[in-house]
Length: 277
Image (tube, rainbow, N blue to C red; front, side, top):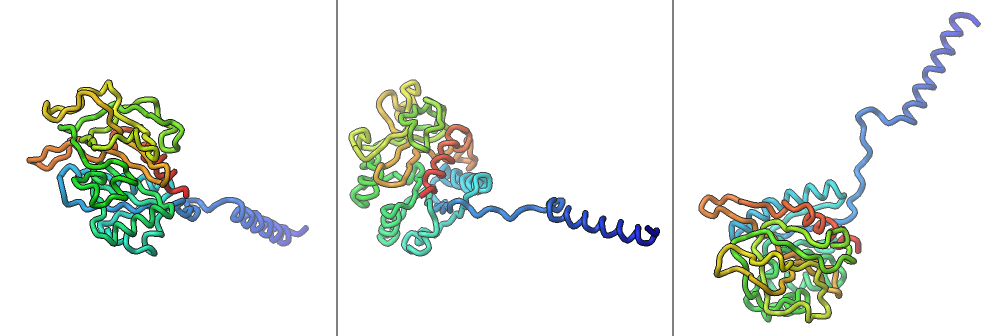
């Protein structure tokens, strides 16, 4: 074979090898298209009342955004509670969060009830269950949450040792028997949730936490206090945390609701369950 012909054959072989390499080996620095989110989460908030609740919202929205990236769901934060009254807009989301409030208008409340009754997922935090008049929205406070009226709270905000009461639920299956929560102010209500057959309590205050609180006039010294629960008839979760300790004069947070890895696991596992409808 002449030198010229040998050179041409060598060039053709080199080209073929290069083409095969392009097909079989990804381009250096390239990346595959991101997978579609497994489910979509809408976080509703007001961000206007009580510095401790505002501090929670300000850390919750970035935290959920980071978790969305890590766990392949999408997260949208909004102060437009009228989305609840728009079935077409609301049904784009598999999970709705109430971060620091609850819907106020009749249209928002009716839309949210329709959403939940059709199987939409919901996770409410702390003040989302606060009320002085449970009859003002009977379905939400008495049927969905089962709480009745707000009764009292601990003060100041502290951690609590929580006892996991149900480890068969997807939101709590991966949790230990007890764990220490992040700092929060803790609520109690007039109804005993243990007497409601539709309510499944997931975690409560462990008796070793007592006394719970730092103000002698607002300290729990004994009793039964549910902290996380679900309603067997709906795809919902409620978590009685979401109030940071605050240096109120200087508007400075002194704690983080996301400081407990175990509590965070409950949130992620709970979201994955809520979003799996």
